[in-house]
Length: 375
Image (cartoon, rainbow, N blue to C red; front, side, top):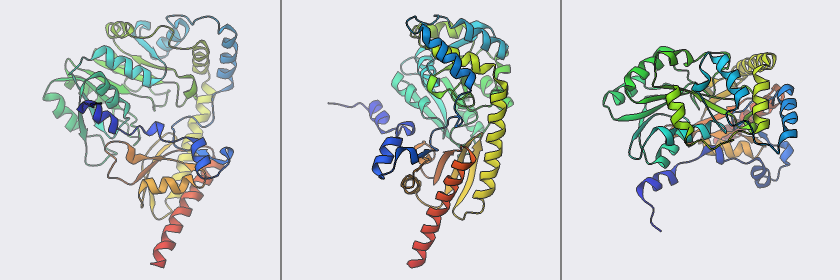
């Protein structure tokens, strides 16, 4: 079997989201699955609100029927929420699905897609699967996107689509709205896709720029603050003509009835979002204060309940030592652009779990210092 260079590059890409399994880790370290705590995937640790669960359960009674082809109720609610035309909304089974569909709809074989590093790896993967070339811009430090470098790449021309992640995964960096507007102008006839999956839903983000930049696309999801990662609901907001082109390739009924019902319900649950927002802020501040007292660990970046943590040991080793104690974290070196940094990405949970995480981190560095003292 022959593997062409494009496939070889894709085969070498590390898909961080597929590298951890609670069941596998429990079996590997002879732990009870119930005793393993997952800090590796960025989800809402408090689960979905009761309103969403009730709405989803009610919708299951009609599971023998296909959902509305246009997702009218959800489309109308989101159009009103964002102040956009209903025809500006494009839906997918989570943002992974949305990214795949828009890359296939709006680029052609041989086009160039621009990304900054480090960032969510799905942009590059889907572009390469489409047959696109990928240009990468990396700054001097991973927590700061090289906006000037992206402008230089766009000025050189030939970029069909540019991806920007804000807040960025895994660094938490938020790119100012004026910087996004500048990139949209620099993109010219190319598209600028701004992934706001990690943005607080109460914030407008780049949405107000859509009225002035026809080449701008904004991505949102119900997986993070809304607590609906398992229902797989993501969407793009873009010019109606772009949406119409993407609709040709969208599988019909690609959102389940229960998912639509849960998403509609959570949009009306402001109290749930307020509680999550306050808890995320409180836990992040507490964790930052506690981690500052541990030699060998420091915060490089954060957003909501996500923290990028520098560590004074190989991140793979640190992740394995923590896993042995039932603490699962993400090895941030799996992100392109982070290979030369010793960092872990953790998604904080409630106080009791976060205390266990902190104790485990403190423990592995105490062990390291003791081992050094024996040499």
